[in-house]
Length: 194
Image (cartoon, rainbow, N blue to C red):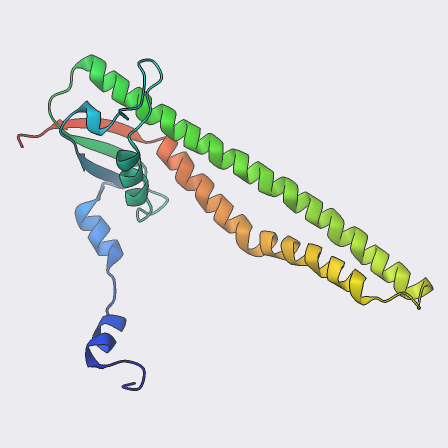
């Protein structure tokens, strides 16, 4: 083993993550994932580029929440705990509405991308079938035509078809679940003394 690693690297390579225990300790409570976020004011949550009536989340805030949820098991609902100053009822309503709206837009973007990929899949399926039939017909009746060109076309379609069916489709389902969880996320406010 010394050939591939020096002694210290070997220790790092074989280090194991105990993510499930860490999540149980830090995030999960009674089957619910609580994501704590510390803010100093509403400007940490709402983008400074937003206009009144058309607010959106600050990118850094949104990315923090989205990245955090990546590790939470998909069966656990999410509650966003905002730790910070005492917000007015209007500010709380604005924050909840903005979080909900942005996550709904994110879900819509994910659904749109999945529909686009599914449409491509249907075209690749049709292309695979048509090019397969064309290849069979050409082999039977037109012996003098070079078949390599038709093999390339067939495998181009077949590769995309198989990749979507066995690999990408599962990734899209996972993205949809994550986006759906974020769109269903509840928001709680905790006044912190800091």
